[in-house]
Length: 512
Image (tube, rainbow, N blue to C red; front, top):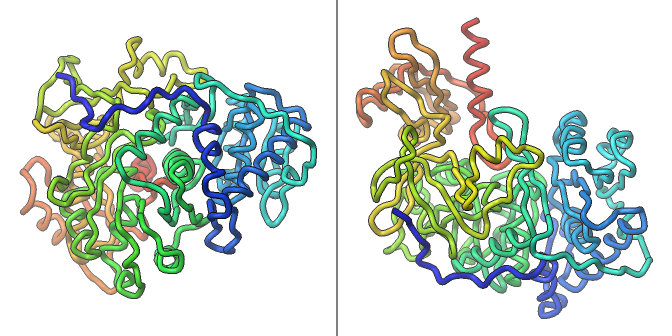
C-alpha cells in the first residue's frame, strides 16, 4: 500500500538554492534576516546579498573552483550564514562540521570529503591548517573573506549540482556523508513552506546547530526564503532562549524533545511574555503523546510533531496546526510530493494501514546516496528511489504517520520487541523524573532486558524499585523496566538524539 501526501504537489525544483533564497531578498531590503542572539549583531537581507558576494569573491580569489567542497566549522553565527551562501555563489559545495569536534574528528570529515579549504574559528583554523590548502578565519569579530573587494563573477549552479555534504550522526560507526543537491534543498524548502509552518514576518529563535540539516535547511534556508528572521543562539540555555523569544517577539518555536521536556517541567515559562508565539513544532526524535499533551497544557500552544532525517534533506512529515485535526503522538502527514510504504522487517512484504514495519520513502527530498559508500547506499536506497529509513512505524487509515523507534535500537526480550522510546515516554511522566533513556542490556535468560538511565529532578527523590513499579503499571509485562541507573545527564547529540551507544558502553564498563 502506498501512502501519499494530502498537500498539493510542489513545483519541480529547477533552480539553485541561491536563486530560491537570495532571489527574493530584494523584496525585504532592510528587514533583519539574521540576528546573533548573544551579541545583537544584525544582518539585513540587503547586507546578506552584498556580504555573501564578498565571501564568494574571496573564495574564488583563493582558488576555490566550481564543484569542489569547502569545509565550514563555525558556530551558529552570521559568519556561518555568509559562508554558506558565499560558497554556493562561488559554485562550491559545503561540508558543515561541528566546531566543537576535536581537530581529529574534523580532519576525518575534511579528508573524507576531499575539502581543500576550511572556514573556521581561529583555534580550529590554526589546529587544522596542515590538513587543508588554506584555512580562513571567521568569528571573534574577524572574517577575512568578507574583506575581499574583488568583483564577483558568480557561478550559477544547476539543480542537479551538489550543494552540501552533511555527515550522519555516526551513532553506529563512522559518520557517513549524505549527498544533497540544490534540487533536494529547494524541494525541501518548498515542502516546509507548503505546510504553513513558516512565512513572511516569522521570527524563530534558533538553537538548532547550523551544521545540522534541521538548522541549516529549515531555520535558515526555508525561513529566509519565506521572508522571516532567524535569531541564532550559539549555546542553548532555556532561560536565555525564553528571554530572546520575548525580546524579539518570536512567532514560531522549533524544538527537540529535550526542550519540550524542559519547558514542561520548568517554572520559567511563566516568567516571560510570550504571547507573540503562534506555533510550535518538535522534531529530531519521537515524542510521546503524554509529553506532547503536557507541553500543550503548560504553554497553551498546539505542538506539531515533525519527522525528519538527514537522508531526506530535513523535513519528511509534519502534523496539522489545527488542534482539532492534529493527532497526539503522530508526526502528521507526509510533506508535499512525497510517498511512503511500510514493509515487514524480516520478509520485506508490503504492509497496510495500522501495521508496524520499516517505513520507506520516495520524493524529491531523498538524498542521492552516501559519499564514497556504494555498499551503504545500496543497502538503503533502491534503484527506483525508495529509501529504507531504518525507522519503525505505521500509517493509520487517514494517512497520519506514527514512529515507534529505530529498528536497530529495539530491545529483544524473550523474542518480543520492546521500543525504548515508548518506555522513555512513560518514565518521563513521573513527577520526580527530569529525563530518561532506555537501552537493552544482555540477559542470559531473556536475551535482553530494558534498562533505564534516569535523571532525577532537583529536590525530588525516587528509588529504582519505585520507578520500575510505576512503569510496570502502565505497560505490558514484557515491556517492564528491569534495571535502573541514576545519572546526572543523558548523553545526547547536538540535535537532541539520545546517544544510546554511550550508555551501552557505560553499562559494559560497569559490569566488566
